[in-house]
Image: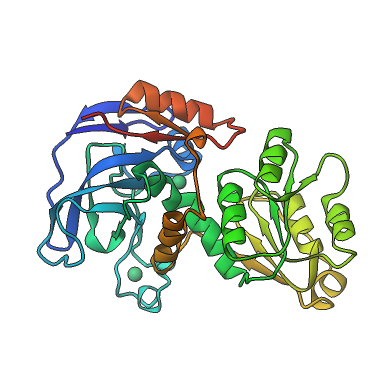
Length: 344
Ligand SMILES: [Zn+2]
Ligand SMILES: [Zn+2]
């Protein structure tokens, strides 16, 4: 089969002819219908995030049709539409048995530790393949399994509930999903903090209150807009100590700040006045859980989570096109996601 693989860190991906994966009893073989090109893939190619083995087929955002089913897999049949949970886990370690598979002792991320979806076919454990309803296009089924799933996990970790207000710091892929999911949760006001005018306009057009961090301190703006109280939940999706601190400072008493963005910086907090006094919480968020995916799929099926056609760009399973998309991702400033749709 054809695959587009990373052979050398810092070099373009290359086309390769590789063997069709052989499945075990617990696996399914999927004919890839869509594979999202993610910012993380650009990081793997550049060597910013470490890859353990080369050559490797990238691609952790995958949807397609089941081609072959292992004898132990009972919930799927040949021809079924599916989307893929990217974390392969053992199912039996102390974390897996508690449903916390993102901490699995032997977890392997698809497209990072195992071959991913930049190929005609992919082998995954049956437990990682979720039925994809007909209403959800394959392209959406692929990309929602990364940033949308993590946005949902962040809302869950923050215990976000109907009637609460929320501030979203950063309106990239995560923020785009987080805004829609917050509204699906029946939230009160949503504030989106950004410095990019196009993103601010896009957030406003989707019903958010746009907070332009260039014009004044976003904490001050949110406090003013909430009659001095602040928001119930803040999501930090940028990965900067400055915005993490702002996320904490804009909370109302009992508010929760969920930190999702990655940074190596330290952040300072005055425990008494900024945390203890308000009984505020700072919560770390990493990846997402298989158990959350059925709810995510239902939000997409019902249309509460949408990726309109103008937010998607399609390329073929072609190394030149994929490398160009990875190049563009480095300085992407819009919501357009590129998805590989292999031509037959
Ligand atoms: Zn991704
Ligand atoms: Zn495990």
